[in-house]
Length: 287
Image 1 (tube, rainbow, N blue to C red):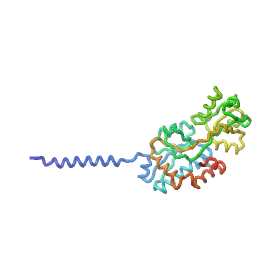
Image 2 (tube, one colour):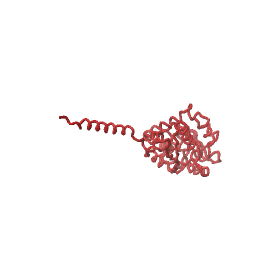
Image 3 (cartoon, rainbow, N blue to C red):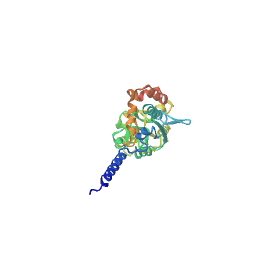
Image 4 (cartoon, rainbow, N blue to C red):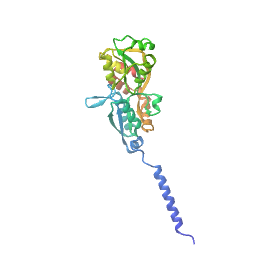
């Protein structure tokens, strides 16, 4: 006589398997992810940054600047467009290399900004937002130094000087390349901020350095005795926010930059640039 319990046991087994499959397909999104924020209606985005005048600096108690305000506009757009309240947790990191590694090694819910140049090499270890600004890297010295007319004269014009670099940046790479090509054995000294580079280079005929054009522009406006050697300009640069590889905040950040004909084409973007950098410099750097 057949066992009457067998069909019942079989049905229970099938139901348990189906239930397990359902739970597997509706797994909770990773904590800190955009998917989790979208599901919950809110989320936190931890924003690491390297302090820089005009871009990320404190006006009294309030953190402000170009890159800070753009990120706040993103948070506002996310709430308006998706109904997601994004809490921005800003965290300063003065060391550029530590900043970069912190973001690269992070999990979901982390973004970084420090006017990081977008390069193919860096794309191998991190994710970039669309560019938020163009840049020109400029070669500078004290104003008393003769102008460099040809790159091959680098070792002659800057004989006796020390290359001053912000360690771990493309500016260091550029300086080392010039020195390697035209001034082998040129001493290299490290600075800990762009402000330090400007201050030391302007203090006397001792250093040659690369800085971003906005640092040079502001220093000249403040009366610093600096000379720009235009033969050394590197103009094909773009800055972007950085995220860990695989972060699902990347696509929604791309969506923000593309909305309504492109954020960089908006009056809001121009207003942010002009407020923090001034109309002249903003015009130079707006794509």
